[in-house]
Length: 72
Image (cartoon, rainbow, N blue to C red; front, side, top):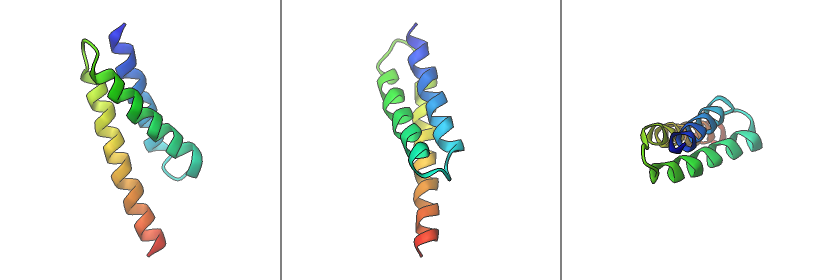
């Protein structure tokens, strides 16, 4: 049961990464993935939650890089 929270966080983080170009929906999935993954870290088996946090951080770096190139 505890693994489901981490899996949900990972799925939301991956959806946020895949929806990188969609402004509001992509950010919503990214933030939800980060929050749910962070919540899943404090469960019994946090393996998938750590992957969700990793994907969320990678998504944040990509979002900032794309934003800088678009603005610059």
